[in-house]
Length: 194
Image 1 (cartoon, rainbow, N blue to C red):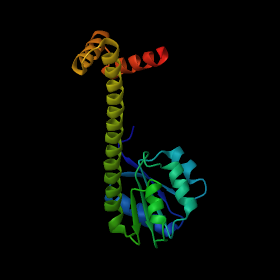
Image 2 (image 1 turned 180 degrees about the vertical axis):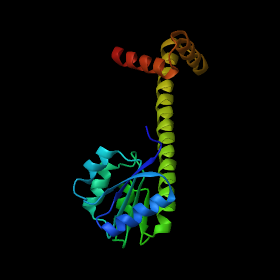
Image 3 (image 1 turned 180 degrees about the horizontal axis):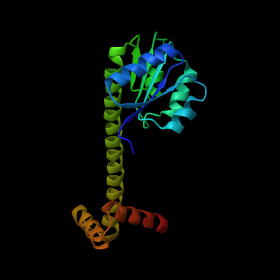
Image 4 (image 1 turned 120 degrees about the vertical axis):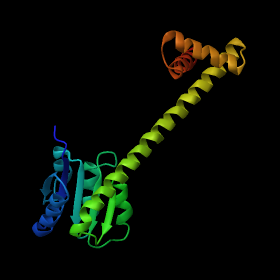
């Protein structure tokens, strides 16, 4: 397995594509593939499964952004989009499509690598935030289930909250499972019995 960063460059104009490729070659040892045709972009990106996608277009269309969404959802990989001019409302659509960096009139040889690095950093930052958010949501759901199970135990056995929690915790330790799993089993069983 190669440690080289694999990069897809989406650029229809040969001269501009060479500018990007040469800039990347000067900046490091990358595995660069150029895609010159936007048709079927999502399929090609999915097949090649790059680490980063750099797209250079005069003005992005909603169709292109849809292709990017299909190929590079926000969870898949960093995408930097270079546009010559901004069309109203497309900046937001590009970000929603999973674009990590949206650069207007910024395709210059000396800016490509720093912008790519910023897109990668932003992508990783948002990936970490999504993971933390998912973990927080999971913890909240588990907390709700545990609270419901405690309530069931308090009602059925006449326990106070601390005693109900202690019983759940002891059962989880005795069975070698997570507290939330014991709570879920209790809530499920109570639902079947009511």
